[in-house]
Length: 235
Image (cartoon, rainbow, N blue to C red; front, top):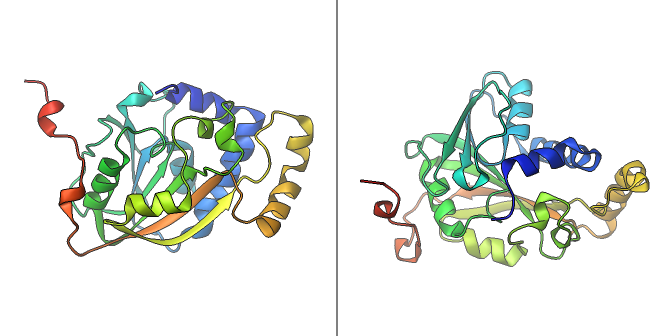
């Protein structure tokens, strides 16, 4: 693990990061339906997006869960609960959450299937999971000047294989077609490049947003690689 919450925060404070943050917020909003009075869990580094949702929907019950490999939160205060957790064990009851959102998670965890299993566990029947992951064929995964350039990246087939025993992929879109360059021209023309790229090369964006629905029938637990709790709890 080569990146911390502080590193990601610093990126989002930069000119390029501010553009990315705004676009991701727009993408999340674009795939959401009516979420009034829902229970939402952010898993990974999600606070910039959860805070935006909270401003738009004050009635949301929001919890932010930050895996311990991020070396703690960045110290900002938000108007929702924020907890540091073990990366594979979410301190929430089964079938208690309407929506789970992950950013900067599945590319970093050693066993992403264990995270998917936990997401399935806490989701209500027919609940939704929104994942933002680096796209393998995109430019952003090839540069280490941004958080999407660390850890693993995913193709559509790889993501579908990861979730197939727990979730159904309802919709997927790619975005961030402009290059991850800290350059004036990029700041000025990113919107034009993004619009053209989404029309001409819709599958070549640097990040995928994947909207998944919980499978409510029994899963094949023999495939699960979840870490035994005895390896975590200190006696």
